Image 1 (cartoon, rainbow, N blue to C red):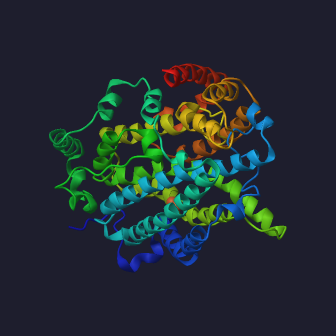
Image 2 (image 1 turned 30 degrees about the vertical axis):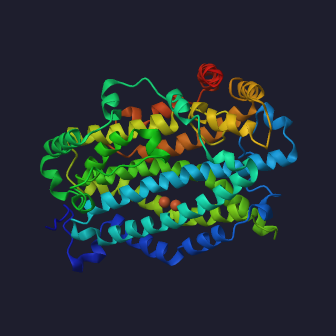
Image 3 (image 1 turned 180 degrees about the vertical axis):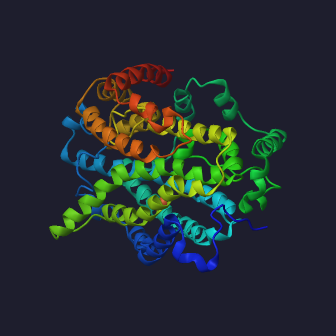
Length: 451
Ligand SMILES: [Fe+2]
Ligand SMILES: [Fe+2]
């Protein structure tokens, strides 16, 4: 059964539509007209690392280990490789985060589809999902070829990953531990029951996407931003909530905005690099072009996240205390997982380096640096456990993004101060703290490697 929002629009009232309806119409039309997915797919298909290997893909500042003692000693070809591997790492993360997006676009679209007024919104979300499919494929193709060329086939395996995951475990409050425990079928049924109980009549808009899958287990996602935010079990809980209440379906886009804005922090640098090369009539490396066109596609997604998270949620009745709690919980966990620290090895990444220890260790032992295990550990200590220029460069990106997030979250009246003021992210702006955390993690990592 179709519902009406409290805006109660009539078909012949289009000139009186609230501003955000017009913005959604305009964004959808512009996105369809502009759409760079074919261009991006072609670039991916024709990518060949060797013809892109001798140029920087973005300004050197956005290179793995930029500003560290290792970077100072690296040869010019190693520096180029570090610039390329930065793209690979960031777009691997982006591909995974966009896979998260594809699922939650469909889940929340299934909620909005209950309302007659949101036809265009649903079409736009559907279109975005199809765009992400192209984006992900291209990122993976370029990443795969570059990794093979620079690090060899062995770089694709991950034998130490389980050890490394243990390093990433945080001390969490009990309620977060509950969400992170695994979920069997009986407990999934309990999850469903509890969500219905807590959301009451709000579940009248239960996602059509989920309805069609009710006989199976609750859809969830891994990797990317989701993995940093919570376990697959936690995401089953969020799936039910984002997929049941119209307020929470809208609020999901505040979380999606964290992904949009984090991506833009580095992608905009590739965008600027593309323009600079174009102006100078120089040839443009394929990955730089992919980032450029991706930013153009993503600019519409970002507008949508913003308008849904800041405006559209007000079309629905005020959230209950429970809805406010779930909304704040998701932002809190995303803030803590995605933005809670400061990397010393990866510029424009705002989490502690612990989750990168294993890839760094493998990178240093790869054909690119040919270090022994002992040398790799020593260089990791030099690059991650002492203050250096790289931390200061990263702090500059951190401060800029923090200001942008605060402006974005400020108008969301349901947020706890810890979220509205981005207090967790703000507390991560400490080189001292980042270095101390890395020292602890490095000691544990060294013992695990040795043991
Ligand atoms: Fe994308
Ligand atoms: Fe997107």
